[in-house]
Amino acid sequence: MEKANDIVAGFDIGGAHLKVTRAEHGRIVAAATLATPLWLGLDRLASALQEAAPLYSGASLHAFTMTGELSDIFPSREAGVVALLQQISEHFPSGERLIYAGQSGFVGIEEAARLIMEVASANWHATAALVAKLAGDALFVDMGSTTTDLIAVRQGKVANQGFTDAERLLTGELVYTGFTRTFLFGVASSAPVRGRLTPLMNEYFASIADVHRILGVLDEANDKHPAADGKEKTVEASTARLARIIGRDAADLTKREWLDVARWFSEQQLRLVHDAAFRVAGPLSDDTSIVGAGTGRWQIRRLAGRMERRFLDLADIIPADDAVRSQASSAAPAAAVALLASERW
Image (cartoon, rainbow, N blue to C red; front, side, top):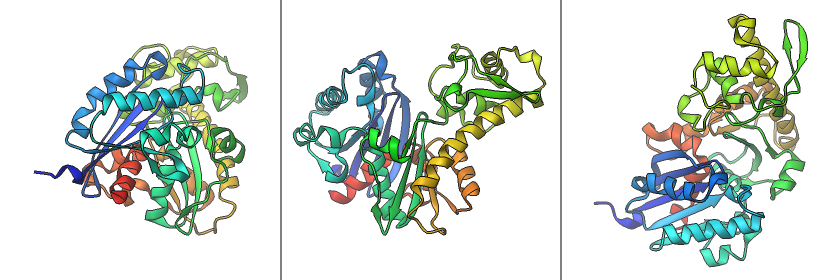
């Protein structure tokens, strides 16, 4: 029987997903990502925690990080952090609870309530701190469903320029584009159709998940929210959604032409991330690798090729059972706090 103090559960409470991992003896043995649309109510978090209960059963140490305080269900980030800390207290009344507070490391819930701005959206720092331990020097890039984090790691330390979301947006360390949930008009204002640039209809007709589904690079397990029209998630349905954003029907173009349109949007997203990566990678040597994490690792691999840098998948270097390496990389912040807390404990 496992000793309780050999089991650490890690949680990343986001505005759209809850990520949960289980570490035993300093290795990730289970990981899951659950849809958790906080904007619809905190009951969605409660339901997700209940669904994920088998992953943290038996753990006496629970480590948390968060970005969910940004959800528009809360009047401010401060109010969001306070509310989520309250949820943690209610759902985990026993056992040790640690909250990741950026450069302050792990703190208890009471201390976390006094370090609101260090707790808020600090999940990127946790993963970068883990990468610093595993890789030494790296350009760490984590593309999730909604955002992309780009962090320089030098000599085993996180070398970030900004810390808050506002600061990181300015430095290029946070790009608001992700592999599934991003609106297409968030990466481009037009698309080429038969050699002519067509302005987009700025309506939520399709998402970048539709693009990556058409291109055949989307793991359906990573697209956990309903499609823009609430309909099925097939290549045909995604093509119909993509067509609407340029004022057309799916039958208007050939399959090859729709692939070209999809490639355009994915390329525009990559260029956004590439521009930011140039800025963040400035202090790093030319032979520094890119370590990629998140559901958008396919895009990060392309970024590494574009920048002529070696690509390392966090899934290949993270301490984890082989069967869960990909899931652990996709839930990287939850895996990071579980592993970092295991060391601390």
